[in-house]
Amino acid sequence: MGGGFTSLIPPDTDGAVGLTMTLEGLNNNYRISNKGTGAEISTVSTNTFWAASGAAVGGFSDPRTEYDPINNRWIVCMLGDFTGPGTFPPGYPNSSIVVGVSQTSDPTGGWYIFRIKADAASQVFADFPLLGFNKNWVVINIATFLNSSGAGSTARTLVIDYPALRAGTFSGSLRHRLGCSVGSSMNLSATDNTEYIPNIGFTNGDYRVDTITPGPGAGFTYTVGATLRRGQVGLTQPTGNLLPQSPPNSGVSSCGATPCPVATGDIQIQAAPVTRDGFTSFRRDRAYQRGAGPHVHLVDEDLGTPRSRRWMAGASRRRLRPRPTAASGTRGRTSR
Image (tube, rainbow, N blue to C red; front, side, top):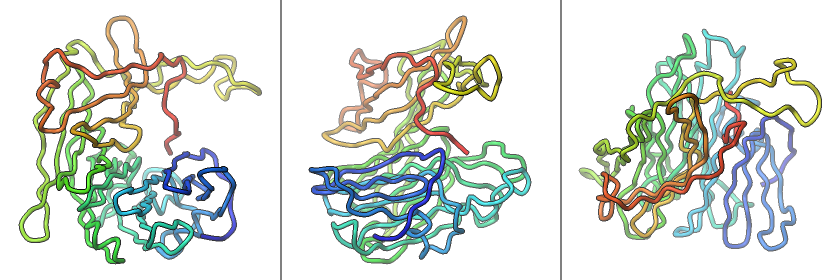
């Protein structure tokens, strides 16, 4: 890695930790640091890093950065081609996903980089990618929105042959998927052939766990899991900008004397789930309404993989650890 750097707000901070180095992904730059001392090793702009992809300069957003401890590789992805007037139409007709994997365990060395169009027909654009992997596949989940109006569309899943990717060859397919918040896990097993994909619903704590398993030949089979419920009947996902926000530390809110309210409708899985020792764990925002008003908190949740998921269907054992309620919401990024 090498090259200049730029400044961009919001930064959409993300990163991963390897054996001796850390790799921080931002909307504007990638930075590699010494894990032990924190000293900067390299900083490169996202425009420079992704130049070989062919995506438009200045159109990168939403970095996702992972370290694979099994194969000692770094995996990154971003949204590409986020350029244009920002109105609907035309939206972002060239919207793409860019994905890269380090050629060795050293992130300062060479990378294999690819660009995949989010929609061949240019009807939708991609947003909020989530990056996961197991021994067989790199999996990227995206939300999509209509270029004609900006309204929400279907979730989609990009499944990439991981051994081929590590060898410098792209082999993958983009599939439509049902679900409002879909996040592929980092499966930290050298032997498990299954990739687990939690899907979160908007009401009553509904969820499901989809799976990807080896299919005929070199293919794969995507199986939609059964819809399960935590037993939280009566919880409804509110919509709109309803939550209060504290005044700015300095200056004046763009909404005037009253600070701008925060949207409640975002309960997305916030980062890649992790599959380890029979459980898939993830972090997400939860904005549910029961009675007078909405409440938002950040929760860690554990979903049992098939050998231990039984308790999630309504038995007494629950792994739900709420964080303190945040008056201004808990989302750590700002969407375009």
